[in-house]
Amino acid sequence: MAFNVSLVGGGGVMLSDRILVVQVLVAIFLCINFLLIIAFFKKESLYTTMRYMLFALMLLSDSFLLFMSNLLLLFITFGLGIQVWLCLIIYVTVVLYTFVTPITLTAMTLERYVAICMPLRHGELCTTRNALHCILIIHCLSCIPLAVILFTFFATASHSIYTRYQFCSMDVFVFLKWQVHVKLALYQCFFILMSATIIFSYVKIMKVAKGASGENDKLTRKGLRTVTLHAFQLFLCVIQLWCPFVNSSFLQIDFMLYINVRYINYIIFFVAPRCLSPLIYGLRDETFLLALKCNALL
Image (cartoon, rainbow, N blue to C red):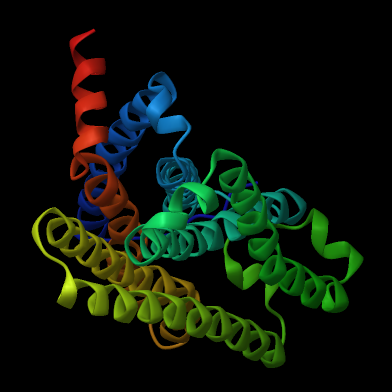
């Protein structure tokens, strides 16, 4: 069963151009991510180092989200509905990895804090074993908002809803205003905790930077730039969590306005932060860039 979205006049052409832009952006960065992931698994010094392991986790998470969000975008654009039970499965995995990226960014910031502010303990704390434990903790923390969202859905959903055909979006799982308030409160708690961690790390690294000199100064300055980029990326990721609520508000005003706002939000707050990942820690990092070049020459 399909749901048709009727667009007349130049609207269809404009929508086609927008979809084409999204496809090009997603394809480019999925290819870059794929090359970086191959480089990661081929070089031992990368897959045994904590910060690169966390970076690889973020690459995999971002690649999955880019692919799935693009697929859902195509479904909605061409008016294709799916059964709610299938949408629920997709939604569960998308929400999980939506939180994995910002929490991983926070963990990577803490790793930079340890490397610069506690260099003598860095080798002890940031081992491969601890990195695996950290990845497990990241997924456990990401499951908390997912569990709350599912609980509020199951508490209010009727049994008949699972076989309905609908567009797969967050709106499917929101029935009452208190559900929206619970989600917003949860998102804000995560945002505050992650922001506080990044600000704390930045201030501590800044203090070390004032007394650093020579090679240490160069390392510290690079660490500061990385943490600053992480903060900017985290800011975009968190705004993206609020976008569905913003989009829903515009849907009640005007459908075409809703389409325009959703497209802008998707490009700026969903695609952009995930495109920054390979630039910040992949192409900008000398070790990773060297591994990438070696792979390209093979």
